[in-house]
Image (cartoon, rainbow, N blue to C red; front, side, top):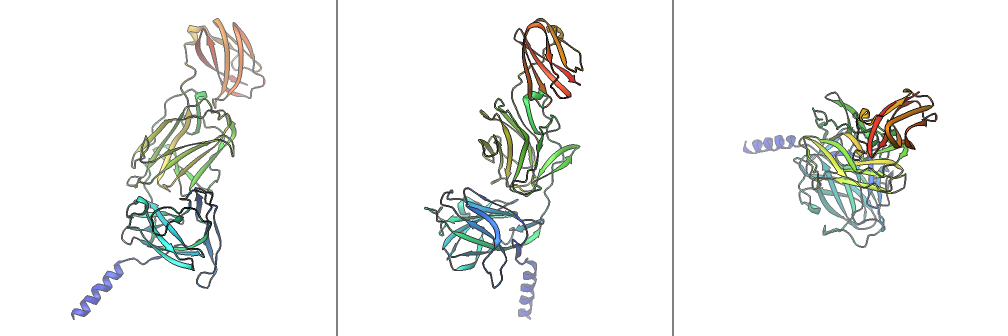
Length: 432
């Protein structure tokens, strides 16, 4: 009787634990990306695994890359690895060269890593246990949407391999406790409203407060569907999805060389473990041209925090960016971060003085071909800006009145900025 009782207890306990199953077999099109100089990360027909040939994730290392080069895969189909109880995953790995593979998981729980040795005998099933704190990371506990592979780790986990050896490995069948992802809760309050700024002092990529520059806002650098616009408290907000990056391509290059500030408001899902979280923003002068990247994490100012709107407003140096054309966002917080009010700005370059005090007037308004302007004293010069803040015309007046040929301007609303005795005034006119 005692033996039967013990057997029943064992069976009940066994039933209570979930069984591991394949969460990614690379037969579909999961989001993948190589980094830090890895030669390539692609999904290919792999070597026969267990008598069958299937799609595999192939990583090729490069002696020209960083020792910590690697590649990642973001789990799709609303699936996550649940590492709350069972801290292990299994991965089929093929190689004909012995090497050490560090595998890292990222998600709502602490980032965790573990290293296992591969003997180079072909297909081997490696088991990674995320309780050892490899590479300074913590013990896994939570739901994980990203698995990252580092093929240049020493087999004893004592550091990165030096010198780097060119090897090709194939990865298949990531197996663990599989469950449907719990959708992170978006914010219930809208992002802070930006202050009023002159149109010519702002390059807005995404904000209801300013006029956005013309752009392809989801250029597909890391695959389509990198973002999704949702409404939060009546305010349009961008949700960052599961791709490794979002690419933004402007319709035309913008002179950003005099702009000195970067602003974005971001919200990270309440309860998200931000220990290893990153939110990186990158300016590109022209495709393949100069680039400037600004990175944010738990150690930056401001620091990333979960459950609140964070206003990132930092100094930047865009000297020489006379043809700012592309902007990139990279983050490992898949489906767990939202942002709004993404723009670049500078200190006000035109203070709005009292036009009556300066005796400024202009006519006709709307204007067809000629805009006449006058003031009590000499108008030194005048600049005309479109609603996107781009200077479209600059003229020297050097007298109390003058005429400006606006016949070549497109129809629309413009701002004129003028200088009288070193006092700056602005006014709005319409070109018909």
